[in-house]
Amino acid sequence: MLMLQIITTLLKIYAFICLAGLTSWIIAIPLYFICDQVIQFSLWYAFGLQKVMEGSDTLELIQGNLMVILNIETDGQVDSLQSISEQFFRNSEDIPELRSRVVKFLNNIYLKEYKGEELQKYWAQAFVEVQDKIHTKNELLEFTNKISYKKIPNEKIQFILYLIKDYQPNSSAIIMYINHGIADGVASFNLLNCLQDKFQVDNQPLQNTKSSSQKLQELKNCLIFPYYALMTQPSTTQDTEVFDDKDKPPSFAICKDYDLQIIKNLSRKFQCTINDIICNVYLEAYAQYLQDNKLSIPKNYKCCIPINLREPMKSKKDLSLFNVQIPPEAFLIVPQYLEDLSNRDEEFELTLRKNKQIFDGLKKINYAWSIVMGARFLGFILPPYILSLVGPSFMQFSRRNISNICGPSKPYIIGGVQTKRMHFRGTFHGLIAAINILSHNGIFRISANMDRVDINAKQLIQKFEESLDYWIKKKL
Image (tube, rainbow, N blue to C red):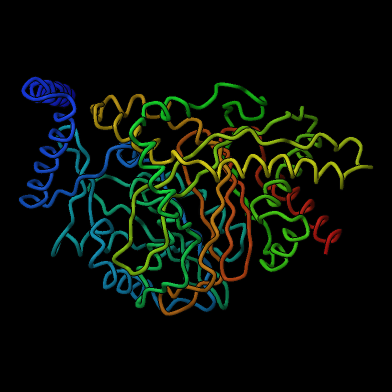
């Protein structure tokens, strides 16, 4: 198989050089890609093979162990597992990605939609009713951790839904496990919207609309995408030994419910966004955690901040899955005032302003699609086997991230009942230190997902709650 992939790559290069020799490099580049698209269309028409775009999508599908997990609690108990299965089935008729298996063919990754009896077989396998007795938040999080490192085989449909029907007297719990190569965080919530019996155009996760001039500037920057791809290579700077790879078990914790309106009011008091204030509170809690555990407090917190590039959908037909995001690296300022809290208010606001400048700078990035194009170009020229070897090093820096999604403001309906709480997380095999922030249905929550690092997620979230409670009491 490897030899076949190498031969295919060499044939690609040879074909391109021949085209360039017959015409010119300027003409050869678009002509080559046009020919490739004709071939891919033929494969789709003849064999039903939907090519997955090169880049992070193919890398994550090759790895097979990167997942998005949605934790959902309902307001009332779900009718039955069958009711969810039937709802998703009837509303996924125009979403082939949700009914497909992964196929590796030559140098490309494809999705092939199941039909007929095969579809019924694999669709049924994707829905699981949990028999374990799970009735508390901690038990639910422990179960989520237990399944979070399962790998979905290529021949299976690329999602699994777990139902805990009698989670609580008036609530069921649902865990939806989706291959990250199929959908990132925002795409997963858009997918849930499209699986409703009626698409809710006014109930989507927040997605930014760009002006024509902004789109034109990004298009111009794509012409020199190699420059931006090289410019945004992650730093090798180490900030603290806390994030060194260690043989520590995974830990996952979600904070208590906060009223979203209170969080909005707090952000207005500080004249900043919700993301600004919450990230600064988290950094204060992180510093407090380090101090309590007699660990050194670094000046910076190195992480990537995923930025989603999608725009709001106007209808269900606008659904775009896969990964449409970039993870720029940031060095956030960590509070240094915890040994002397006499100037806590002033120092907190000073740190907040500095971090706000960093976040404002990320919002002004106008070369996002250049980075996406660079990743796709690399995926185009590398055989899948080679990509699977070098891929983990490309993904390493994104294992430390702070991801914030302003989720759908109103409930969705799953299995005949409304959602009450939702949360999300990404899973990797190996080291991860991820902070996920989500608001839904007027409830605001933040979580910590730690694995193979010397940080206890529950203790860290407890420090976050203490810090946030302090500022709410102080300012409101």
